[in-house]
Image 1 (spheres, rainbow, N blue to C red):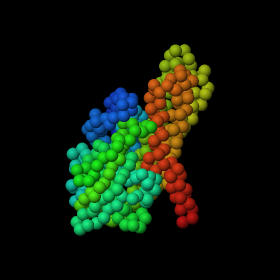
Image 2 (cartoon, rainbow, N blue to C red):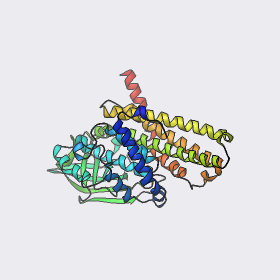
Image 3 (cartoon, helix red, strand yellow):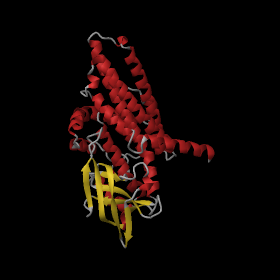
Image 4 (tube, helix red, strand yellow):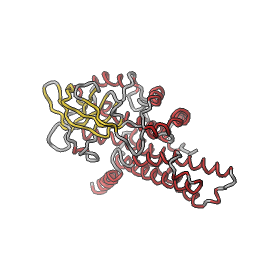
Length: 388
């Protein structure tokens, strides 16, 4: 429905987009409402994503990755799936986010040991950073990692861990120094003694995504499971955001597109009942505003993704993409529910996909750094560019 040719860098990726669109519309969309209503993690969709190589897109090629254009491909897949089910799209994002520290900072030995477990062994990976007292402020975490000979002992609690209860491997950020911001990432297996899963969170939106607490009680982690150099965990997390924030923007973009499709379909049905759209000038304005916000979001998302794939600094654009697209999705879904009310009143009843998309859109404003934090990042980057 939307022309995306100028933003997709290769013919292969255009074919890839169409393939994912067909999978999402045919296999994922029919289950989306039930998953949301009953709030369960859909193992069928997980298997589908594994079968089509979508949970290893950002991996090295020898472990199932696509090679070049990894971030763009991730955003394409996320966008197409999020048109129908944001929860399923989030599974792709968290797999990329959680595996980022080992792919970019793990030793060769760790990669040989764990990446096959994730790819061939189909193990999901969770990203344990957020804590009850440290959400947007990553440098304020309290979980500790104390070195003792050939191992570290990890102690602390993590919250809002996406895939926390279904993952087999965890990338865990913990303090390795009393100095603020001096933290490190560790690769932790689900079977390590002392790791336990807390409550599963009930959420406003994206209810098919498994989100839990994870507790670490004297978890003994081999010293070789340290990812990168001790003390550089914060830097790894920030670099991870440069990849993940465009992907969250792509998720928000997909949600907005899905909502617009719902409205257009309703208009088509009304037209068939001799109620032409010219009789609804307010809805025409909503259509125009929604389509404009969607196109503007797409430009930011894919520009940020392309820069990431080219190895160029995209921190400012990544935050712009996430912030703008998330706010746009919230505005689009809100106005589309208003439009559906005008058309037939159903928009207020929660019986349409648009109501689910409205709730899903809200979460894109919150995770991977709230949109308030994104604005601070954008302003700081802008000032840095101008003032040095």
